Image (cartoon, rainbow, N blue to C red):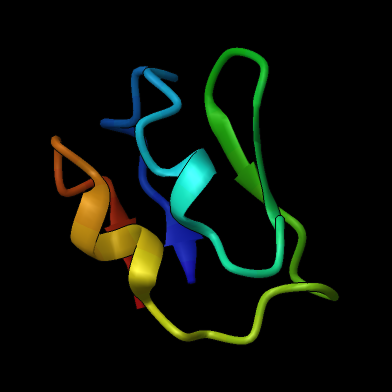
Length: 52
């Protein structure tokens, strides 16, 4: 999973990550070591700023 430049840091995706791999202090960031590529975050991003 990758956070695209259009991310505005709204943190809408953060609470939906089942493994807690996303932090959003400004633009969201995904911890690639924790991420399982389930794509749940992608479903909850209001700006479609997460790509697989």
